[in-house]
Amino acid sequence: MDTRNISVANATDLEKATFYRKTYLHVALALLAFIFVETFLLYTVPQDYIISMVNSGTFFWLFIIGLFWLGTMLSNKMAFSPSRNQQYLGLGLYVILEAIIFLPMLFLASYYAGGDTIMQAALVTLFMFSGLTAVVFFTNTDFSFLRTALVVGGFIALGIIVVGAIFGFNLGLWFSVGMVILASGSILYQTSQIKDQYATGQYVGAALQLFSSIMLLFWYILRIFMSRK
Image 1 (tube, helix red, strand yellow):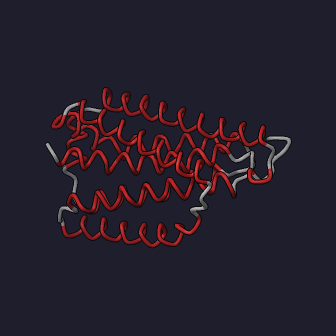
Image 2 (tube, helix red, strand yellow):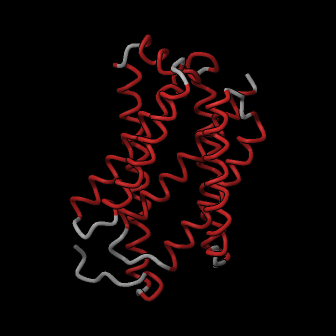
């Protein structure tokens, strides 16, 4: 553990710079690990099995969503554990969960829309993340007021997803646009929290929070790009 684990807001400029460097380095490492694990899965998991996942019934996907939610809760708890080993296990577990949940989506995107579509969606995601991050750091705006809207919006979105899965209707382009806005708000909120609320030793947990928002943003930007094909 860090010998000094104080609030980032009260840290020295050097301590802040060190915390930010470690946080965004771990975000980058999580993204690279996701690419590695996802590539491994796409090349090793039989296509017939992936297609069967895509064509699985409603209750299978509700079960998967439930497992993903539970896994996310566990990963977050571990990532903020006092133990550094537990923190890395939490981040690693979440990377694997994201790779599994993305497997059918990226397979379909690669097969029907092509690798260029995935690359374009990834670049747009990174540009948006960079821009939103810059807004927080350069304007020094406190985006903590977004918390209530994000919580309510998250529950509404989850309810719509579950209802859509049960009744089998397509959520459509506008839902994806709304989720991009929600993910963008989450990045603003999480970045603001990192500046004002986190402790200098919590860079692994901070990286997990940002990584999860980036992946949510990427998911729905990719859906928008795929809808154009």
